[in-house]
Image (cartoon, rainbow, N blue to C red; front, top):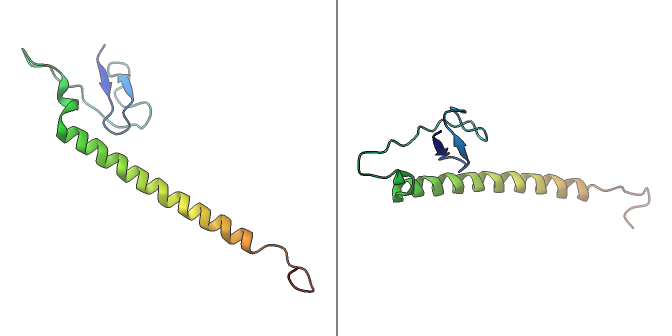
Length: 88
């Protein structure tokens, strides 16, 4: 049983059961432990920066989607029903 943390979404899963992340489908190789070492490679500053960058990119994309949805909603509300005599 080799537990792996997905670098893209952060989900922990068993690499022997699922070769790919069950949440996002990313391929994550298990970290090999060297003799006398630990499997703390996921905690290195470079890995954390990569994960932070991916999260920021995902948040930016989500924000753009929300802005588009709000724009469509406001557009639909501004085109409300009009009466023949004008707006009341």
